[in-house]
Length: 346
Image (cartoon, rainbow, N blue to C red; front, side, top):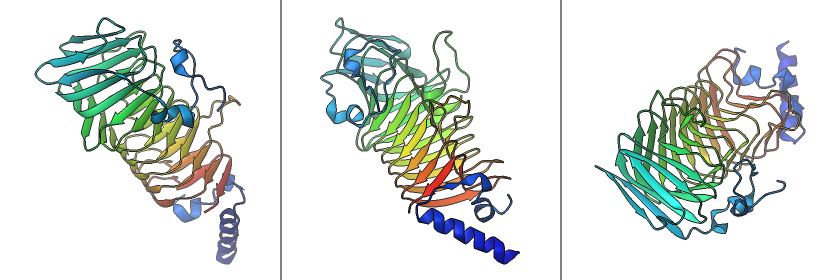
């Protein structure tokens, strides 16, 4: 009996390493890892309608292909200091105490955040894509998101080299009846991260970072804590091309709710109460393919909850390269799970 079981696992492993896809309904990894059981891209410079969805696209997501010639600088301290080159010409900035609201109808604007506030926030309305530079800013909002972007456009988040940036929300929000907000750093549109600085986000209400569109990380160091839900939560996609991500979450560390996850590189240290990395869509819309592709990176993943898998895809899961160090401690938790096809090529 023991000989037969060992033989079957070795055969399955050989098939996987040879690049042959494998249906994981038999849970190949269960006994070994846990014995207990782009089409039609529209340039948003030409579109004002926030209802238009933009798909992940290497060319348009590359910050080097966009220019930002106007600057608005916001510095927190004992009061808020604003330097606005477009005052009266398409960008208005208002402040209630240290809670800042920016409204923009202009293109090519860079917003620069500096300083420290223990009772402040930044909310941005914009008809066009923009650059959001964090230059050593620390924002705590006891009653809502620290950064709240109510725009469906691309947001190029730039973490200035050598800076430490910290965003913290409160455990209770003063909700807006017509606006969604569910993270310390929330955006209706795409969040695209660049720069070699560091960003720490403390999520006390729900998620640490959330986009109702997609999240893309090219570089940077991220220290994310979610005491209630996910470290990174996106609706349509999560794409990670590099960077260092340290995530401690009560629920999933990285979740794509209605789309796919693509990881090309990066260094991941994850402790999660539920799934480590998951493409979770399961509601029956055949136009949504919740696949996951991993093309490289180092993954140190620990999950603690029951049925909390380290890496899980509701669609196919393809691993082309990477180093994986996985520990699952909860009952019926697995290291790697695919609800469709699992392919391991290296």
